[in-house]
Image 1 (cartoon, rainbow, N blue to C red):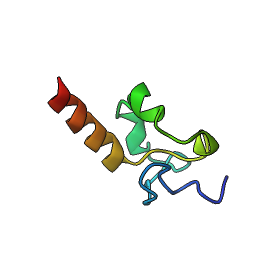
Image 2: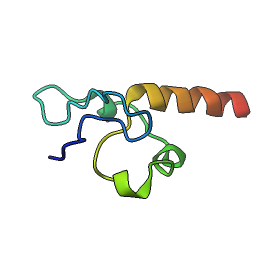
Image 3: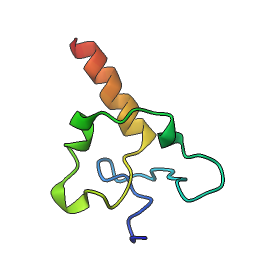
Image 4: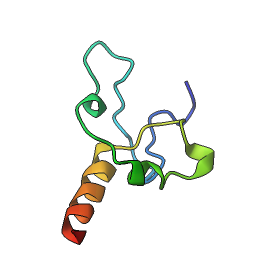
Length: 66
């Protein structure tokens, strides 16, 4: 567990990660686009989850661009 485990590496807000709880985390039902993961700075990769707000925002922008 890292000190920044619960901080989104993109927006610096709480990512509401629940991967280590009894109930499934929100991220297990949501597709995280590879293009969004690529935006995580190298020093923060694999240290914490991207939050649902960033995933939703990215998906909205991607849909608008197509």
